[in-house]
Structure formats: structure tokens, C-alpha cells
Length: 314
Image (cartoon, rainbow, N blue to C red; front, side, top):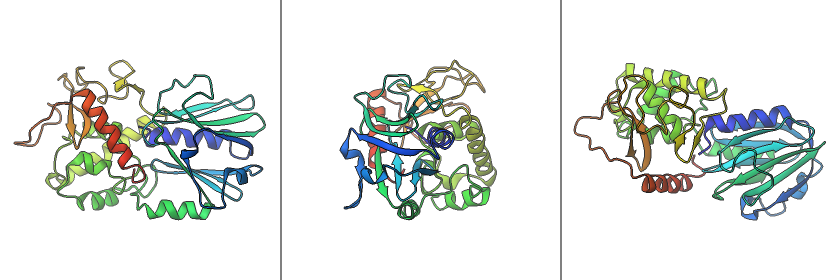
């Protein structure tokens, strides 16, 4: 699922290559993608200049002169820009391949800018959504989601993290960190990476953490973002990490490989109905906590259903 690093890569690509350009046309291949109040349509975007692109967590919105387009890539969304007038970029889910001919059968929306520049939203699972509203309505809508602080914003402070985390003392660490109302931008991949960095088991109850452990987790999240954001996110395909061992991601998608820290074999278990990767030595399970090994088929199906059900919340 595209998480903060992937969505931030799309934001940066749009900011660098498309902001300032005028929309001259569009093709809505999947009408169910778009939600708009009566009286608003993409026709009204044509002729408007793209003036800004913003992000909060996994939400991305394009602000035109009079209207705004809010996007959520959800489980398998992807944004690709191409054209003779721009270098082009690709961000989001890795399927279809970034260099696949466009548009194709998974393309949901195509935005055409002048001069020759095109932004494609593709989605193999058809979960992605777009909302067309006045810019002020988009800002209000995002605020109403009550998202936690964005991981790249100055609001993501140690104090704010402790405050939000400790409100959920009875929850297990991984499900709590996946809740976008706690922090905005983490998803399955980067929660696993952060907990591995912090050497904390994902099934630990929040209330059992000491302040030094919370500090360690806060620093781990920042470290993971510092690694993932500049490279546009982790390279994972069909649940498997593509880079060789020793390269990011360090634990997610690496079941059966040795832990880089201690050499113990990385396991894939289920926590909160999500496929979860960890080192059983570096991240010891809570005393008496049963471990459910992941059946890949069931676990990945559960992940898909969970992501879809929490679509706007995430």
C-alpha cells in the first residue's frame, strides 16, 4: 500500500513538474473513482492552472485556481507522469510496472497539461478514490478526519507522539501505529521497519512501554522516514523485498532471511489481522503472548480487506 514515502514522492514529482501548468483535458476511465457534489465536474477544471500540491499523511491534493482534487491511492494506487515537456516520474504501488505503456486497463484517470505533460492515476484493485471540491472544502475535509501529525511536519514532536500513543494504552503497538489518528503516514511496511529499528514486538501493549522505549520508537520512526523518503519508498513486489539483503527495507518482505542485527531468521506472523515481519530475537514476544504464523494467502487477503475498510481513515 502506498504510504507516506510513496505519496510524498508523488507530491514532489507533481510540485516539480506540473505545478504552474494548465489543465487542457482529461479522461475519466473509471467514473466510480470520482466523488463530486452536484454541479461540479472535471469539465470545470479544464483551463485552470495547477497552483499547488499538498499532502497530509497518505492524502494528496492538487489545488487548481478555483477547484481542488483530493486523492487517496489506498491499497494499489499509482501516479505516473509522462510527456515530452517533463522528465516524468512514477510513485505508489509497483504494479503495473512503472514503465508500462499508458493508458492501460488499470488506468482510472488521465489529466492532460499544456505543454505536453500527462498525469495518470492507475489502480489494479480499483480502491483509489478522488474527490472534487473547492480548495477550502478539501482543507476542511482533511481536518475533519482528525489525522495525527504528519511524520514530516514540525508537529511530529516527541511530546505529541507520547501524548497520542499513551491514549491507547490497551492497544497493541502495531494496530495503534497504523491508526492514522495517532500519526499520519505510517502503514504496514513502515510500522514493521520502525518496530524492528526500535527492537519492539508489534504485539506489545502500549501501556507496557517505558518512556525510554517510547523515545526509541519515536527516533526509529524518524530514522525510517529519513531512509525511505529520499528513495521514494521501499521496493517490494508481491510481498517480497526486491533489494538484496542489507538494503532497505531491512525486515518487511524478508521472511526466511537473517536479521541484519543478530542473524536470527526473520519471521512473518499476524498481528491485528496484518501480515507482520519481525526478528524473534531482537523483538521478543510479550510473556505468554501466542504467536500466529502467517499463511501468506490469508494474511494478504486480510491486509487488503483491512486497508479497504479503513480507506478514508488511513
